[in-house]
Image (cartoon, rainbow, N blue to C red; front, top):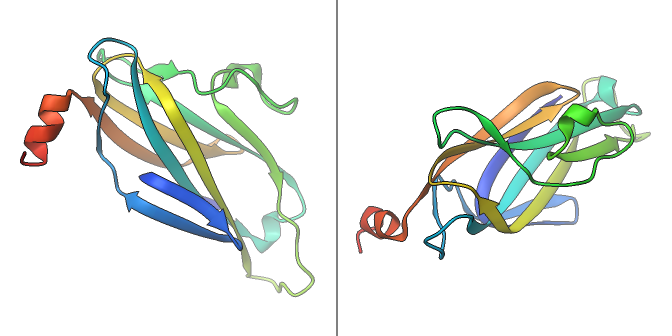
Length: 160
């Protein structure tokens, strides 16, 4: 099993495909100059599920970690957990899924599970570095890092 995650301006799933716009974000700015700093972002996640891992339950967790003060601290994304999740996962997005093995699949085939996760008004505690970590069954699959900067820094970076 594998998963890839991208930060983007917009993502949606249609017809079993993942459509992404404005992907590859590495810097964000908030319209607010005082904490918390709300931002709008989408996570585009594409999970590849091996034939041997179909027809069984899996747990995906998505964690947002702030490194803004020099240490790693979880930023709350959710206040709910499915029954199958560990209480230590509190604050993460947790998704329980089962990929069905289609009758047309043969040994070696993979299933794709696309996800588009909107995070509107996500309150970030401080300027600095952050990362989203995507785990499946406790194993980290991918990370997407970004930095929260001031509006002025973002405008300077964009050349205007």
